[in-house]
Structures are given as structure tokens and as C-alpha cells.
Amino acid sequence: MAIEDNPQSRVKYGEELRRLREAAEFTQEELSQRAVMSRTHIAHIEAGRRRPDVDDARRLDQVPETGGFLVRFLPTLDGRTVAEHFAGALEFEGQATEIRVYASKLVPGLLQTTAYALEVLGYGHPPKSDEERDKLPVTRLERARILKDFHSPVLWAMLDEAVLRRPIGGPAVMCEQLRHIVRLGESRRIRVHVLPFTVGAHALLEGAVSLMWFADLPPVAYVEGLKTGRVWELPSVVRQCQEVHDHALGDALSHRKSLALIRSVAEDYEHEAQ
Image (cartoon, rainbow, N blue to C red; front, side, top):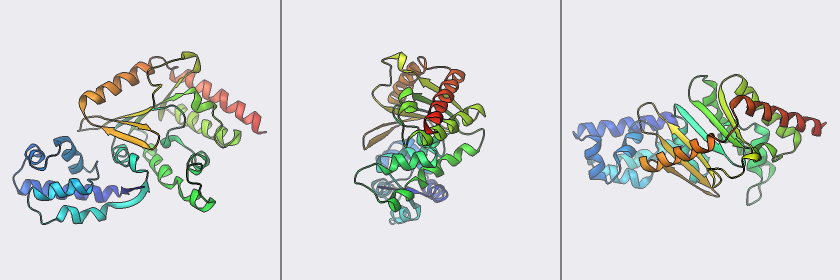
């Protein structure tokens, strides 16, 4: 597991880095060259969107000479634990103004109900006790707080039909989960598009992807696989991910038809649960 930082502490860290850089009369570009880091990465840290790792802090501590301040500051960022491969994406998620996510097998974490999250997180390896399992959804459910703001972030969720049909936790859990998505869609808080089985092959068969945009920084893409995940900031790669996503979106059902399908599948689960 990796450490998820406290957002307020992360902002303070960024402010300190900017203060030290400006005191040394360095631009972000000059600092990036001296610290051998990308200017975009430094900009994300200063804006409070990224948590620097120890190597980042050590390089930044050398330029300008800070006496190791930025490394010593790292422990103040510690908070909840999340999967290490997702930690970078989580830092971006809370700051994004728009998120477009494609899910091939499971309901995206931002949209999961408590019961659904418990089932998903409880069946990993190694096996977990009931007590251990009950603690797991906390971080995932706290992520959903960003949806309480009606306007930001704008969220588009594209779901493979397999997400609807796989009975995670049984029919009662699935009925509740799908109706939760329908409520969010009907309230215009999110847009939902389902890629139906009838489409056959499509552009996103290889895996899940999340695209994120920000108010004052370039967009990023997060691509995930089994026990792995990577945040891409390189513009050419982000653009390719956007193009693949848009291509698949062209094959998906409209928002209205998607909600109708999800509602119908939820009713099937309800009848099965009775």
C-alpha cells in the first residue's frame, strides 16, 4: 500500500516549494532543469495536485539549497492508505475539473455504493477477515464526496455492459448499485454511456482508462491493469488515450438509452432478489 496525503497539507507543501523557488529567483523551467524533473511535474506539486516522493524531494532540496527541508516535510502529508499504483491518480482526481472514465469490468470507484465496494475490496488476495474488509471502503467512499458539488468535476462514465451484468455481491447489491448510478444520471450530476455487448470489438478492449482535465494545467491520463497503473502526463500519450476513448464513446449508447438499459437491468436484479 502507498500513502495518500492530506490535500490541505499537500497545498502547504506546494506553497513552501514555490516560496523557496522564488526566493532563489528560479523559474519553474530553471528549477526543472537543475533538479532533472519536468516543469509540468513541478507545477503540479506547487499547485498541490501531486505528492512528491522521496526522490523528488531530494532533488528539489538540492536546488536551491534547503538543508533537507522538503524531505523532512514529506511525513506531514501522510494520511489514508491506497493501492500504490493508484496513489498518483488519486492526487489528480480531487483537483480535476472534468473526469472521463471507462470501466470494463467493475463500477468505477467514484460511483460505488458501500455494499458493492465491500464485495469488490473483500475478495482480493490474500484473504481478509471481516474486520479488515470493513475498513477497506473508507478511502473509496470518501472519494465520492467530490460529487456533492453539482458543477465540478464534470464526470462522464462509460461502462462496458459487463459491468452491469456481473452480479457482484448478488442481485440485491447490484440492484442498489445500478439504481445509484441511475439517480446520479437522472439528476444530471453525471453522464453515463454503456458500451453494449452488441458492439462487439471496440477501441477500449485492452483495459480501463481515466482522463482528467484541470483549470490551469495540462490534462493527464491514468491507465490501469492488474496490480498496475500509470499516470501519463506526456501530451502525445494523453492525446492518444483521448482519441481511443472518443472512438469507443462513438460506439456507446446515448445517455438516455444507457440509463434505460441500466434501469432495466436493475429491475431484473430486483425481481431475482425477491
